[in-house]
Length: 294
Image (cartoon, rainbow, N blue to C red; front, side):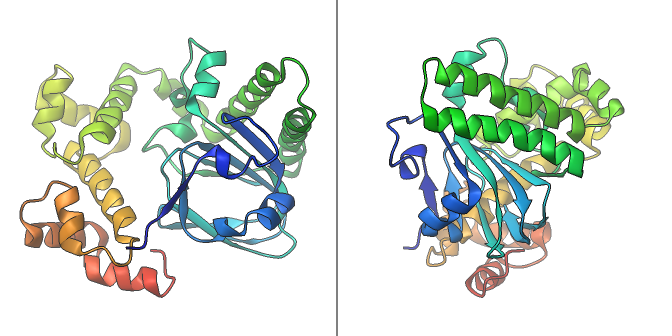
């Protein structure tokens, strides 16, 4: 059975003993790790800044343009691959959640909008000035990582957090920043976390409302006010994103995907998949086989 590879930091840090952080200029990274051109996942958080080159970066079945100033921020588990021009360059770093949490014990990575499971796109397009500013921080991180001086992890952590702060200011509008501190938005984040943990076997809005100690109607109102979607839509978005991820295993039977996602009725799974994505699971697998990631 063909599997989607999941890479941890140990797959990239051949010359370093660290298992919590990795950094490289992008050209060296791409030349040294040819295996990453196929669809794959990371068990870590990933940040990639492009300073030159062009191409397409596909993240969880959406295609995004690569150009100078594009920066991608991925959460653990997202499936991605890319098709880049020969002159592609920039910087990349990975880190575990534990690395960040040990340095910033009173703050969580999910405070940043690009790491919130259903908030917007995994890419920002920076201006020339913004690119130079962020590139300088990436360069400092890369130098610190390869120099391995005393207090290197702490300094790297501070620089990483500074990048995230700068990018979150660019990522969100003033109105969205206010919403982030809204009580309803906080509850939405709780719901998203619960869905991520339970979506395989809990697909009814009422079950999540019960876990959050609020009424189903109240939960529905929160979802409509914050993202303009129903609770059921958010649940099914997560379910069928995972279905797509599983279907990338080209040889896995659709019945097995259905079972893994908690559907006792395979025909119901097929109907719902087509309703959510516009194509049948079989047609989706055929698209993947021909290299069409949509």
